Figure (spheres, rainbow, N blue to C red):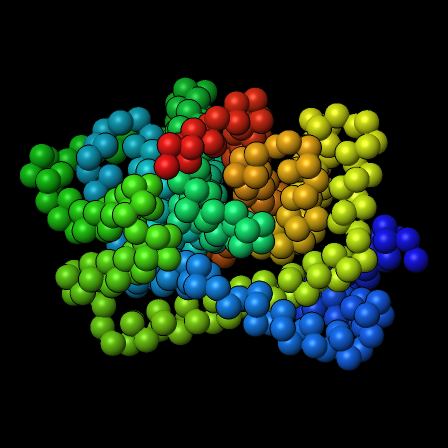
Length: 431
């Protein structure tokens, strides 16, 4: 059978299983194992499944995932996010829209500590929404601000999404994480511009907040400086090459643990819960990686990926048009599945095409994560929207109504990344 036809049948079967609401990890495993059994025989399929289950995750580099997750768990258990929010709140004082600005800056720092969009949205929703509501902020601005800040979690290092991209494509995770810094800061700046324009257009959207004394400002730094130093050590260590990416992740997790102990907010029960949460989430991610490896091995044996790449490169379609078609696929997938599933499904198929067309793989990693972020806030899935609804208590319609402004920010960010790839590549090139 023609490789393209066989691979296409496999993809159709995968989407059919997903439509039946079978978790994507199990769907990929079933299609991958079934496809290998059909093409290579049942005995070889069993043997390949066994070897793939080991080699898909038996790499010491992959320790970055549980270590960065643990770092975020310790930071969350220590309630550092509330300290950061309070610190920014007293420092920005009577700036118009101060609480919205504070929410964005706090989300950016929290993103450095967690690398998770959903966690950032949930925590910032609990911390910032009550504050903005009490200060008289209009709900749409408050929801949009929390949602926008939450989306920073997966592009600013240490990003789980960028780490997964590195694993899937065998690219340098360290370079990917460093490459995410400038785009993350760029999106932060765009979100701040959105808040400024929003307030200019609607002067009642964000009332003035009381200013604080200098004594309060200096005192607010006491509980935040430790975590900021940990983040500087992690990113500085990666950038300078003093430590490997795995060692940097371990330093981050241990540093967050020490900060929690110093603040006297970590006890045995919280440490145990943090470890359990880390193990549970890491197990899910590693099973996903195993399922993806088995599925992509099936595609490799059929020759589907190679044939598809050759078809695209000889078709005469311009590289830029091909890129826009891939972006359209990301947008479509974002409407029907969660972020991790989308990345695990789309990246292995599209990455060979992108590299064959001459696009930089590190740049494509940043672009992929940006596209995944759009999927997090678009209907009908929009996982961040559902998290925001859960922590805010408002209707789903209001949450989706607030998401359009944030969606426009990410579209602008993607346009800038396509126009000037150096935004994503410059810092990583200096390593």
